[in-house]
Length: 279
Image (cartoon, rainbow, N blue to C red; front, side, top):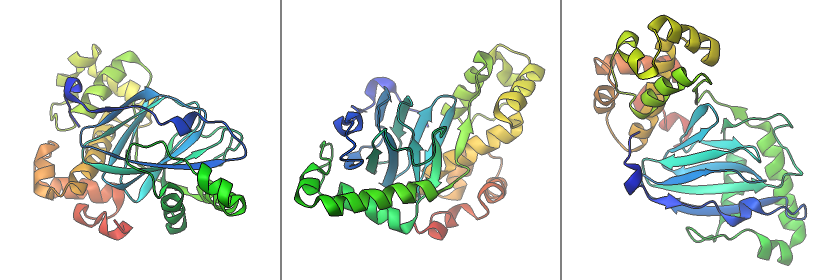
């Protein structure tokens, strides 16, 4: 995904993310984000379950990037610095969990989770009525019916704890040379140049870069670039672009090569990805 940062719509983190209150363990929030939006790098005490009802989110945290289509949500533990970006319009709905509760465990990191139908409905219920861009939590409802709000919160926490992680992350590594290259390819996944040609961006030899990819991402350069491309393809698919358009945009030599790579990663054809997941 490429964008002109100077012309990027920017949003501030929402106030409910910073509220520490055990009496309100789970707070809902919703807002709509335009295409090309970004929320500047930030962190907050509450853990966040971020879900796009429509559209595809891209979340940056630490050394990794997470692609989040509507069938999934990303769990961001409290205190984790992260940045959110969009390419398509997005209806974002969030749950913010008080730091006294750690539904994914004390050592949890950011991860993309396959949403359960029950948790989707809970998120919508807790975030309903929020104006796009507003800071509405569930204070009014909690005051009116504290027992019901507490029950919804308890079920939400239980569901978050049981969600299954999905292979939608892209590790970036720690070494500055590696990060220069992974950052470039993350922004320009369609760059078809071989590693020997790309090595100048990193300021390291191809052999050194291959070693760094294996040591710091657990993937070879070829595997890493393949994953970067198929993850980037999800944004194009959600925007309605054809497999042929996406294949050439992402540097594949043919649509059939792209389709084979996508199927190898997700187990289905590109145009069936969202249909098979209820999207």
